[in-house]
Image 1 (cartoon, one colour):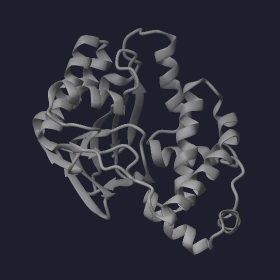
Image 2: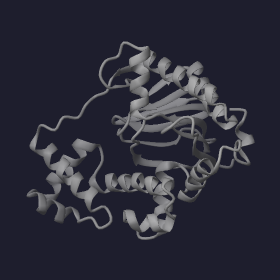
Image 3: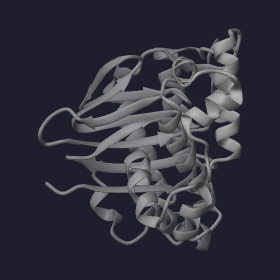
Image 4: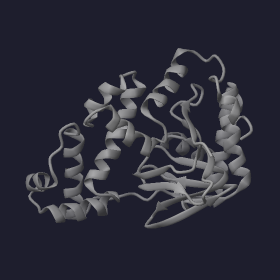
Amino acid sequence: MSERARHWRYDELPGVDLLRARYVRKTFVRHTHENFVIAAIADGVEVFQHGGGDQYAGAGALALVNPDTPHTGRAGVPEGWRYGAVYPPVDVVAEIAAETTALRGTPGFVSPVLDDPYAAGLVHQVLRAADEGNALAADTLLRVAVTRLLRLNGGPMPRRTVRTAGARIAARARAVLEERMARPPSLEQLAAELGTSPFALLRAFRNAYGMPPHTWLTDARVRRARGLLDAGTAPSEVAVAVGFTDQPHLNRHFSRIVGVPPGAYQRERKNVQDALQGPPVGCGAWQNQ
Protein backbone atom coordinates (compact mmCIF):
# COMPACT_ATOMS: atom_id res chain seq x y z
CA MET A 1 0.00 0.00 0.00
CA SER A 2 1.58 3.29 -1.12
CA GLU A 3 2.22 6.28 1.11
CA ARG A 4 1.31 9.78 0.08
CA ALA A 5 0.96 13.16 1.70
CA ARG A 6 0.14 16.74 0.89
CA HIS A 7 1.04 19.57 3.29
CA TRP A 8 -0.26 22.97 2.22
CA ARG A 9 -1.88 26.28 3.09
CA TYR A 10 -4.99 28.06 1.86
CA ASP A 11 -4.81 31.87 1.73
CA GLU A 12 -8.27 32.28 3.20
CA LEU A 13 -7.24 30.44 6.39
CA PRO A 14 -4.23 32.57 7.40
CA GLY A 15 -1.59 30.76 9.42
CA VAL A 16 -3.42 27.40 9.31
CA ASP A 17 -1.43 24.46 7.97
CA LEU A 18 -3.37 21.67 6.24
CA LEU A 19 -2.39 18.04 5.74
CA ARG A 20 -3.79 14.94 4.06
CA ALA A 21 -1.77 11.75 4.29
CA ARG A 22 -1.71 7.99 4.21
CA TYR A 23 1.23 6.43 5.99
CA VAL A 24 2.15 2.79 6.47
CA ARG A 25 5.82 2.64 7.42
CA LYS A 26 6.17 6.30 8.34
CA THR A 27 7.52 7.09 11.80
CA PHE A 28 7.45 10.62 13.19
CA VAL A 29 10.29 11.28 15.62
CA ARG A 30 9.72 13.20 18.83
CA HIS A 31 8.88 16.79 17.88
CA THR A 32 6.62 19.74 18.60
CA HIS A 33 4.43 22.19 16.68
CA GLU A 34 3.95 25.92 17.19
CA ASN A 35 0.26 25.48 16.33
CA PHE A 36 -2.40 23.12 17.61
CA VAL A 37 -2.67 19.69 15.96
CA ILE A 38 -6.20 18.52 15.11
CA ALA A 39 -5.85 15.24 13.21
CA ALA A 40 -8.94 13.29 12.14
CA ILE A 41 -8.32 9.60 11.46
CA ALA A 42 -10.21 8.34 8.38
CA ASP A 43 -9.12 4.71 8.63
CA GLY A 44 -6.45 2.58 10.28
CA VAL A 45 -4.85 3.47 13.62
CA GLU A 46 -2.25 6.04 14.60
CA VAL A 47 -0.16 5.54 17.75
CA PHE A 48 1.68 8.49 19.24
CA GLN A 49 3.67 8.99 22.41
CA HIS A 50 2.23 11.85 24.44
CA GLY A 51 2.54 12.63 28.10
CA GLY A 52 4.72 9.63 28.88
CA GLY A 53 2.57 6.93 27.25
CA ASP A 54 1.23 5.64 23.95
CA GLN A 55 -2.07 7.04 22.70
CA TYR A 56 -4.19 5.21 20.09
CA ALA A 57 -6.47 6.99 17.62
CA GLY A 58 -8.60 4.92 15.24
CA ALA A 59 -11.16 5.70 12.55
CA GLY A 60 -13.55 8.46 13.65
CA ALA A 61 -11.24 9.64 16.43
CA LEU A 62 -9.11 12.77 16.63
CA ALA A 63 -5.52 13.11 17.78
CA LEU A 64 -5.26 16.46 19.58
CA VAL A 65 -1.92 17.98 20.54
CA ASN A 66 -1.36 21.37 22.16
CA PRO A 67 1.39 23.71 20.90
CA ASP A 68 4.97 22.99 21.99
CA THR A 69 4.00 19.55 23.31
CA PRO A 70 6.49 16.76 22.44
CA HIS A 71 4.96 13.77 20.67
CA THR A 72 5.74 11.10 18.07
CA GLY A 73 3.67 9.19 15.52
CA ARG A 74 3.52 5.76 13.86
CA ALA A 75 1.12 3.17 12.48
CA GLY A 76 -0.80 1.10 15.00
CA VAL A 77 -1.90 -1.57 12.49
CA PRO A 78 -0.10 -3.18 9.51
CA GLU A 79 -2.15 -1.23 6.96
CA GLY A 80 -1.13 2.08 8.52
CA TRP A 81 -3.44 5.05 8.87
CA ARG A 82 -5.10 7.68 6.70
CA TYR A 83 -5.98 11.07 8.10
CA GLY A 84 -6.58 14.73 7.53
CA ALA A 85 -5.27 17.43 9.85
CA VAL A 86 -5.57 21.14 10.46
CA TYR A 87 -3.03 23.13 12.47
CA PRO A 88 -4.67 26.35 13.70
CA PRO A 89 -2.47 28.98 15.41
CA VAL A 90 -2.80 29.76 19.11
CA ASP A 91 -4.40 33.16 18.50
CA VAL A 92 -7.09 31.68 16.23
CA VAL A 93 -8.06 29.04 18.81
CA ALA A 94 -8.02 31.65 21.60
CA GLU A 95 -10.31 33.93 19.56
CA ILE A 96 -12.77 31.09 18.91
CA ALA A 97 -12.70 30.05 22.58
CA ALA A 98 -13.40 33.61 23.75
CA GLU A 99 -16.39 33.94 21.40
CA THR A 100 -18.00 30.53 21.81
CA THR A 101 -16.98 28.97 25.16
CA ALA A 102 -16.68 29.87 28.82
CA LEU A 103 -12.97 28.97 28.90
CA ARG A 104 -10.71 31.61 30.41
CA GLY A 105 -7.01 32.10 29.86
CA THR A 106 -5.14 30.35 27.07
CA PRO A 107 -7.29 27.39 25.92
CA GLY A 108 -5.97 23.92 25.18
CA PHE A 109 -7.09 20.31 24.80
CA VAL A 110 -7.35 18.15 27.92
CA SER A 111 -7.20 14.66 26.38
CA PRO A 112 -4.93 13.81 23.42
CA VAL A 113 -7.53 11.47 21.85
CA LEU A 114 -11.23 12.17 21.38
CA ASP A 115 -13.60 9.66 19.78
CA ASP A 116 -16.01 11.93 17.90
CA PRO A 117 -16.83 10.96 14.29
CA TYR A 118 -18.86 14.15 13.82
CA ALA A 119 -15.91 16.42 14.65
CA ALA A 120 -13.61 14.22 12.56
CA GLY A 121 -15.99 14.68 9.63
CA LEU A 122 -15.86 18.45 10.10
CA VAL A 123 -12.07 18.39 9.77
CA HIS A 124 -12.30 16.49 6.50
CA GLN A 125 -14.90 18.99 5.28
CA VAL A 126 -12.52 21.87 6.06
CA LEU A 127 -9.87 20.26 3.87
CA ARG A 128 -12.36 19.61 1.07
CA ALA A 129 -13.56 23.22 1.16
CA ALA A 130 -9.96 24.48 1.03
CA ASP A 131 -9.33 22.23 -2.00
CA GLU A 132 -12.39 23.64 -3.74
CA GLY A 133 -11.48 27.25 -2.96
CA ASN A 134 -14.64 27.70 -0.88
CA ALA A 135 -13.41 30.28 1.64
CA LEU A 136 -16.75 30.77 3.39
CA ALA A 137 -17.18 27.04 4.01
CA ALA A 138 -13.55 26.44 5.03
CA ASP A 139 -13.53 29.25 7.58
CA THR A 140 -16.99 28.41 8.94
CA LEU A 141 -16.32 24.68 9.27
CA LEU A 142 -12.95 25.27 10.97
CA ARG A 143 -14.60 27.49 13.58
CA VAL A 144 -17.42 25.01 14.14
CA ALA A 145 -14.93 22.14 14.53
CA VAL A 146 -12.69 24.01 16.99
CA THR A 147 -15.69 25.18 19.00
CA ARG A 148 -17.03 21.63 19.31
CA LEU A 149 -13.63 20.24 20.33
CA LEU A 150 -13.11 22.94 22.95
CA ARG A 151 -16.58 22.37 24.41
CA LEU A 152 -16.06 18.61 24.56
CA ASN A 153 -12.38 18.53 25.49
CA GLY A 154 -11.17 22.02 26.32
CA GLY A 155 -9.47 23.45 29.37
CA PRO A 156 -6.84 25.99 30.39
CA MET A 157 -3.47 25.43 28.75
CA PRO A 158 -0.84 24.30 31.28
CA ARG A 159 1.89 26.90 31.64
CA ARG A 160 5.53 26.13 32.26
CA THR A 161 6.86 28.45 34.95
CA VAL A 162 10.61 28.80 35.39
CA ARG A 163 11.14 28.55 39.14
CA THR A 164 13.91 26.11 39.90
CA ALA A 165 17.61 26.53 39.23
CA GLY A 166 17.45 23.58 36.82
CA ALA A 167 14.63 25.18 34.82
CA ARG A 168 16.59 28.42 34.59
CA ILE A 169 19.66 26.55 33.32
CA ALA A 170 17.50 24.76 30.74
CA ALA A 171 16.08 28.07 29.53
CA ARG A 172 19.59 29.52 29.19
CA ALA A 173 20.72 26.42 27.29
CA ARG A 174 17.78 26.73 24.92
CA ALA A 175 18.65 30.40 24.26
CA VAL A 176 22.25 29.44 23.42
CA LEU A 177 21.11 26.72 21.02
CA GLU A 178 18.66 29.06 19.31
CA GLU A 179 21.36 31.70 18.87
CA ARG A 180 24.04 29.27 17.67
CA MET A 181 21.82 26.83 15.82
CA ALA A 182 24.13 26.48 12.80
CA ARG A 183 27.22 25.78 14.93
CA PRO A 184 26.06 24.54 18.34
CA PRO A 185 28.40 23.60 21.18
CA SER A 186 28.75 20.04 22.44
CA LEU A 187 26.86 19.05 25.57
CA GLU A 188 30.07 19.29 27.59
CA GLN A 189 30.90 22.73 26.19
CA LEU A 190 27.37 23.99 26.77
CA ALA A 191 27.35 22.72 30.35
CA ALA A 192 30.70 24.36 31.04
CA GLU A 193 29.44 27.68 29.68
CA LEU A 194 26.44 27.48 31.99
CA GLY A 195 28.45 26.39 35.03
CA THR A 196 26.95 22.94 35.43
CA SER A 197 27.70 19.32 34.55
CA PRO A 198 26.61 17.59 31.33
CA PHE A 199 24.30 15.16 33.12
CA ALA A 200 22.76 17.89 35.27
CA LEU A 201 22.10 19.93 32.14
CA LEU A 202 20.65 16.93 30.31
CA ARG A 203 18.32 16.15 33.22
CA ALA A 204 17.21 19.78 33.56
CA PHE A 205 16.57 20.16 29.83
CA ARG A 206 14.51 16.95 29.66
CA ASN A 207 12.42 18.07 32.62
CA ALA A 208 11.78 21.50 31.09
CA TYR A 209 11.17 20.62 27.44
CA GLY A 210 10.35 16.91 27.34
CA MET A 211 13.33 15.94 25.18
CA PRO A 212 17.15 16.08 25.32
CA PRO A 213 18.98 19.11 23.85
CA HIS A 214 20.02 17.39 20.61
CA THR A 215 16.44 16.28 19.86
CA TRP A 216 15.11 19.74 20.68
CA LEU A 217 17.76 21.29 18.40
CA THR A 218 16.73 19.13 15.43
CA ASP A 219 13.10 20.09 16.01
CA ALA A 220 14.05 23.78 16.22
CA ARG A 221 16.13 23.53 13.05
CA VAL A 222 13.21 22.06 11.13
CA ARG A 223 10.91 24.75 12.49
CA ARG A 224 13.30 27.46 11.31
CA ALA A 225 13.74 25.66 7.99
CA ARG A 226 9.99 25.86 7.43
CA GLY A 227 10.10 29.62 7.82
CA LEU A 228 12.94 29.94 5.33
CA LEU A 229 11.21 27.65 2.84
CA ASP A 230 8.01 29.68 3.23
CA ALA A 231 10.05 32.78 2.32
CA GLY A 232 11.31 31.11 -0.87
CA THR A 233 14.85 30.15 0.15
CA ALA A 234 16.20 27.15 -1.79
CA PRO A 235 16.32 23.91 0.24
CA SER A 236 20.08 23.58 -0.28
CA GLU A 237 20.61 27.05 1.23
CA VAL A 238 18.15 26.34 4.03
CA ALA A 239 20.08 23.21 5.04
CA VAL A 240 23.28 25.20 5.59
CA ALA A 241 21.52 28.13 7.27
CA VAL A 242 19.94 25.98 10.00
CA GLY A 243 22.97 23.77 10.62
CA PHE A 244 22.36 20.56 8.67
CA THR A 245 25.38 19.18 6.85
CA ASP A 246 23.68 19.12 3.43
CA GLN A 247 20.29 18.94 1.73
CA PRO A 248 19.87 15.14 2.15
CA HIS A 249 20.43 15.67 5.89
CA LEU A 250 17.69 18.32 5.88
CA ASN A 251 15.42 16.10 3.78
CA ARG A 252 15.69 13.20 6.21
CA HIS A 253 14.92 15.17 9.36
CA PHE A 254 12.31 17.41 7.73
CA SER A 255 10.33 14.42 6.45
CA ARG A 256 10.48 12.70 9.84
CA ILE A 257 8.92 15.74 11.53
CA VAL A 258 6.73 17.49 8.94
CA GLY A 259 5.68 14.39 7.01
CA VAL A 260 6.73 15.55 3.52
CA PRO A 261 10.14 16.44 1.99
CA PRO A 262 11.15 20.13 2.01
CA GLY A 263 10.89 20.40 -1.79
CA ALA A 264 7.27 19.20 -1.81
CA TYR A 265 6.50 21.43 1.17
CA GLN A 266 7.88 24.49 -0.63
CA ARG A 267 6.14 23.73 -3.92
CA GLU A 268 2.76 23.80 -2.19
CA ARG A 269 3.62 27.20 -0.69
CA LYS A 270 4.61 28.46 -4.11
CA ASN A 271 1.32 27.24 -5.57
CA VAL A 272 -0.52 29.38 -3.01
CA GLN A 273 1.65 32.43 -3.60
CA ASP A 274 1.42 32.25 -7.39
CA ALA A 275 -2.38 32.42 -7.55
CA LEU A 276 -5.56 30.76 -6.37
CA GLN A 277 -6.26 28.82 -9.54
CA GLY A 278 -8.18 25.91 -8.03
CA PRO A 279 -6.82 22.72 -6.46
CA PRO A 280 -3.37 21.54 -7.63
CA VAL A 281 -3.23 18.73 -10.17
CA GLY A 282 -3.53 15.31 -8.57
CA CYS A 283 -5.52 16.27 -5.49
CA GLY A 284 -8.69 14.69 -6.85
CA ALA A 285 -7.78 11.34 -5.32
CA TRP A 286 -8.32 12.92 -1.90
CA GLN A 287 -11.79 14.27 -2.58
CA ASN A 288 -13.61 11.37 -0.93
CA GLN A 289 -12.18 12.14 2.49
